[in-house]
Each structure stands twice: as structure tokens, then as C-alpha cells.
Image (cartoon, rainbow, N blue to C red):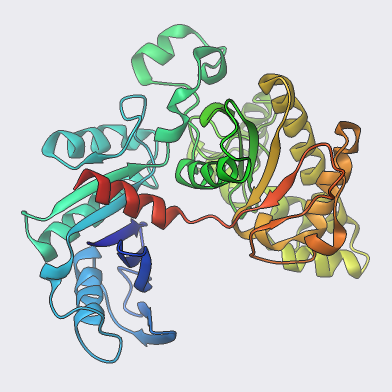
Length: 395
């Protein structure tokens, strides 16, 4: 069975074609700058990559490029689109209604559209991706929606509710939903295997990247997570502020004369590591700046470490202990210095970093010593494989 995995953004479309017999990635790529005259299309297969400039006015045009790359030329991996058995789509916001992946129907499409107010930057592009897939493959192919929020729907009300008037929850669905669910699900399941499927294993998964979130998981079910109604909540990220005193929002809007949209841009695009350092939202740039003696870069680094440690400590309390700590995603998998600092910050729990084992990037690895009271692992995430597995199961 061959599954095409799609992750559509407002101006991008990422894809992977996965043969579920052996879970082998046959090809993958990305369409960038959709809607612009100078679009960029990259296709990878057989260990090679092909990159070209091509105009893609919309997502349907992007799908045409994907179809061509999969079935024609040097990067061809299938003879015909009929070899694709189903398509799995990443959909960011599924609300409280969807606690699992589903086959896409007209009702599901209407629900994704209805929830776009909760994810205005993500749900509309997902709908465009689904429509483009239908236009390319036809109405008979099975398509599945795999929701970022689904894995977090095991949270209890005391974890997902905000202390606002209850009517806002009833009228608008204002609550914590959590995101990066497919990533937290993948790495926590793998961690359960490493713990030999210990019942009620208490795991904290740290998805650290440009966008970051942490989840507290007990027995494979989410107890709490840092992102809220939107991916802005939690701790500081590449360009996002994370949580802070909400009165600051109205204070700055009044002082700076900002509209809601402008304030949203400040919090989502101009804050976080970028806003504090004034250097970059990229950890590599931050580290280089620290080595040059840049005090603000060091402050940004220290703020994030401090915030993450506070959250982990709080989640240990919520879980009633800890059996394993997991690092994943771009920063989590590739930043030994940060991992070491966090493990050392948990020395009060008897955790000890194995610095030699930790000196690795992007590999699954136990990075605590044999006598560490709690193990910590790097587990590279694979959200696309989660989407492919769910889609195959639905088919």
C-alpha cells in the first residue's frame, strides 16, 4: 500500500510518498512560494534531489508538479497515480470533536472550515490542499485528516480550561487544545517501547524547534501540554513569545497604538528568541553570537532554558513522578548543549547527563548515564509516518 502524505501551508506544500510495506519513503519534496511567480519545487528520490523554479499560482498547480515528479523523469517512483492508495493530510485544528484521525467526508470538511477561526493560518491551507488533491486524484481516492490536536484530547477539564467566564468556552470553544500532537504521539510511543511498555509510564516529551511544545504523558495519554488555544502559548520559541502576563497585550496596544492584527504579529513573528536576542530565531546563530560575547543572545538562551525547566518541574508534579524524558524536533534532536543544561538542571531528581553519548545530532540515543535515576533519550520525530500509518489503518 502506498500512502501520499500532504502538509499544506498557505504558500507551501510538503509531501512524502510512503510504501507501507516496510514503511519506506519512496519520494518526498516541497512546493514553496505557491501563489508567487518565482515558485520553487524540490523533489527527492533515490538519494538525489531535483530543484527548479516554477510558477505555481495555487495548490492545484502545486499538485500538478508533485504528480509530474512522481510519475515522470529521473525522480519517477510510480508509473501512474492509481498506484497511490490513499492520501493523508495534516490538519492542525480538529477542536474537541476529533480525538482521532478520520476519513475525510463533506461533514469533516465543514468542521475543518468551521474551526478555521481557531487556526486561521493553518486550517484554510489544509482545505486548499484537500481540494487540490481531489482535483488531481479524483473524488474516489480515500483521503484522511490527521489532526495535530487529536492526541491531546485526553486532557481533563482542569488541564484544558482557562479561568475565563465559562460562557466563552460554550460559545467559542476557548480552551487549551495543544499542538504538535503527531510528534508527541510518535516519540512517546517509541519511548514506551524503550521502557518495555511499562504500564502507566510517566513521560515528558520536549518538541523543541522553531515552534516548541512540551507534553506530560501517562500511560500513553496526554495529561497536559504547553500550547493552548493556538500555538502561541507555552514558553518562548523562535519568534513566538509563549505565555506571559495578558495585561501586557492591552498595555502595549494602548502605548503603541497597535491593532489586534499588529499585536498578533508582534507576539507570533517578532518575539521569542529573535525578539530578545535581536540576532536571529535560529539556535546556530544564537550560539555563534554567545561565543562572540553577545549578552542579549545569552539572555535569550538562558530564558528559554529556565522556562523549559520550570515546565518540566511542574509536569513532574502533575504526573506524580517521571520515568523518562524525551528530546525531539529540530532543536531537541540537534542541540547537545541545551540538552545537557536541561538534564543538569534536573540533577535534583538524580538525573545525570552522559556527555559523550549526548554529543550527537539527529540520532536516537540514550543520553543519561547508567546510574541516572531517570533516563533521557533523543528520539527523532516522524510526523509523516504517523499520518501514513493512520491513513493506512483507515483504508
